[in-house]
Image (cartoon, rainbow, N blue to C red; front, side):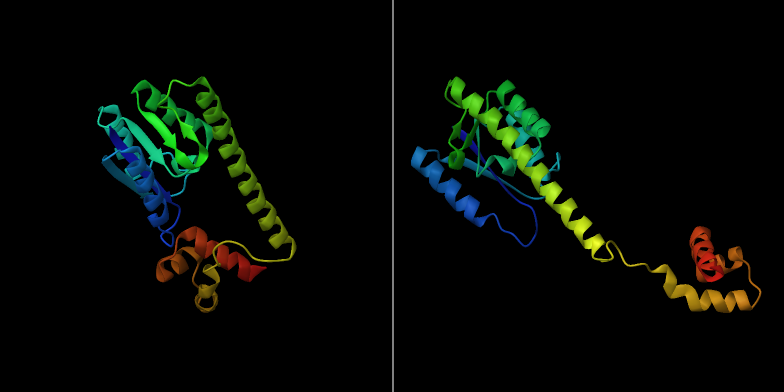
Length: 194
């Protein structure tokens, strides 16, 4: 069999090493020797990822018979994306194997399809819970008075704008002289007027 191992981490600070070791050992136990690895460093919420896209192209071309991943959320976290991937795999007769979660669609087993659909729903639910926790944390931070987002950089020009206003310059002239967009210069001038 031609096997594709799909490995994914979310950030550069993480590594796919432990996923790779476990999946290589699994393939060796199954006697699968024709194995190619695809690895991404990207969020699971992203539909398009370089290695995932390459792996799916190879699946469409009949170069892969089974895709093995560490966990279902390594492929994707949204139900629509997972459903799209699985439907494509099914159309091209590519099995999905997730050893850690007991998923193996290579067997003609209706229970495995049911389990896979349930796990896709759970993966999406988990992502929604994480998203809600982040929103809740942001609301709590705002309530404590924390400033979120990028720091304001326009006010660093405040002394220069005051000097230029004092020299009789208008907003357009200030914007040109400080190489700022007109709207930014206007915002600073409005702040001085308040």
